[in-house]
Amino acid sequence: MPHPLDAGDPTPPRASKHASLGAAVRVVSLLTIGSRLGGLVRDVVTVRLFGDTWIGSAFAAAFSAPNLFRRLFGEGALSAAFLPEYTALDRDDPEAARRFASRSMRWLVGVTGALTVVIELVLLLLLFTLTPDPERDLSLRLVLVMMPFMPMVCATAILSAMLQTHGKFAPGAAAPILLNFGLVLAAAPFLFHPSPDRIFAAYLLSFATLITGALQVMWTLAALRPSIRWTRDTTGTLAPMRRLGKRFVPVVIGLGTIQLNSAIDTLIAMWPLWVGPTMFGLACPLDDASNAILTYTQRLYQFPLGVFGIAVATAAFPMLSRAAKDPVAFADTLRRSMRLSLFIGIPASLGLILVRHDLIAVLFTGGSGFSASGAARSASVLLGYCVAIWAYSLNHVSTRAFYARGDTRTPMKVAIAAVLLNLVLNFAFIWQLREAGLAWATASSAMAQCLALLWIQARHTHRDTLDRATIMAIARILALAALMAAVTWGTLLLLGLAPRWNTNPWLWHLIRLLAGVSAGGLSYLALTRSLRCPELSWLLARGGGGARPSASDSDTLPVD
Image 1 (cartoon, one colour):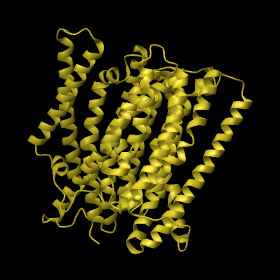
Image 2: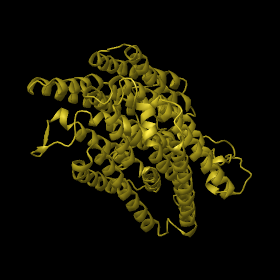
Image 3: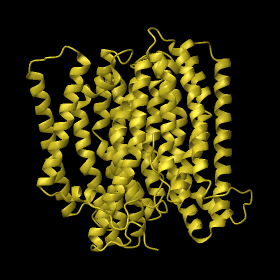
Image 4: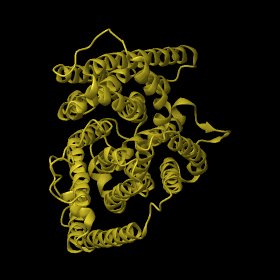
């Protein structure tokens, strides 16, 4: 059955594929950018409420706990394992698809619900047995309140994946808006209070998270109602459930490297609150503010990754799957996907590095936000993460390339090695770099993972992933990104030399940020257009027959 992206395109096959991939990337990016912007607004509000304080660290850790499972299960491995089975059944036997979906949802709710109960019991045990400590106890209580959000948000992610299979992308993409709006609404009264009770605010935002989680489930269920009827009948679902389970563990590890590394980073950053002021008999190099600084800074590099990097991988996945048995077409699609990832990832890395101080000052300072020292530490963390945005993007493409060929074990093995490397580097770097060491460890392990996946992919396909044309394209992207960086740096330098006509620090940082981003973005666009870079034409070209990526081949849209 022809894919919608390829249907009715009068252009030659190769040009059609270029246009289809670019069109799909545009659509996925547009669907996610709204939720990412909403998540950024939510983070700005919570930073301005809690700042770089121990309460900010406690709330950030509690909010990250259920969302880790959402990224690992709901939007990651389970969706990638579930969708191929559900889509095939929906195409061949809609009644069987309905039974399979019903059984999968019961399994998901049962497993995540049981896991939530276990975690809640462990937290209660810790609260009742450990020596009372106000800071640690608040953190554990917030996790206790927010953990029931986990099964709800995982269910929402799978329901959104089902909606995609039925051609409905908007409801799933809009669901996170409910969460972001709910938290902003709950936090708003405290922002205008001269001396807000931040502990009470943390509890209120935690309960608001639960309420919005329930609303998300109801929203996606209502959108799915015309397309599916739930049933208790499980006839004929054993085989697809076994295939789902067989895929799940390798995929959760292969796709979840960044999330697992982030979880490890959170555990280490929370050491002063959860364990104490010493680490292995030495004074802990981190403090109560470390996790707040680390967690909120992570969201800044994840923005371009979520909007563009994962969008490329999501759009490329079905095309790689269709070309899995054609080595020439497979290698061509993989190379194009890599070039698109680098075309966006490399300038994003350089641009964020250059504007990081102004970006953090605009978003996270002012009011009760980050202090001057907290903003400086946040800039150091962002520098560490940003050097590898291109690698995070390529890892998503490379991992899906293995999945397209039916290989889930190789990415899993490489991911395990990357997580272990990250753990070792974490404890090696934090003594000199504090929480920034956690960022540098994540970036280093991601780059090592990227090189390993590309090398193994070339061996398995017996083709050079980096052929001459691809190497030349990467060199051109690097050169253009360097010129863009020079224009951005020069713009910021000139602003620094010019007389400072405004004494408001926040407004001055905003002016610098807008000038730097505008200069860099426009110069990169002008340079790529003047050289007629094919990557830009791929992004701007219209896919024949429709630009929307088919849910029958792609995994779930990333949302936040």
